[in-house]
Length: 133
Image (tube, rainbow, N blue to C red):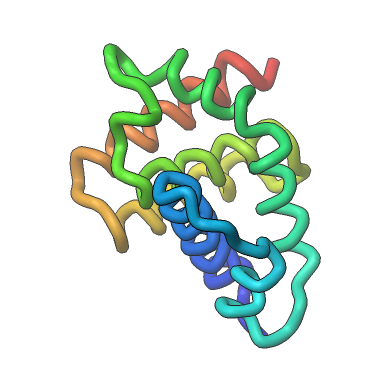
């Protein structure tokens, strides 16, 4: 059984795949994408991915609001997935804010460079301080 950090990595990978398939106009089955990454169904993964997809416009709007002179679509797809997951957890789940931010930073450290990690930290921190009130 995977721990929550490992499950967040699965979520990021599935979100990445979704974006790649959508960009290439390739049909896919969301459940199949999840099953490729997980041997056992997991409600945390399913709920998170579906929640991110359902709230994608609001998540993008929040990201763009706090990405100084940037927009979410200018980030690479992995960074988009990490930031979207972080925003989703901050705004739509009961996960403690410090955990949501830290988990996104750890994913970013693994898959991105230091500048992107700092940017993701900054965006999530601003959302935490300004949007959660």
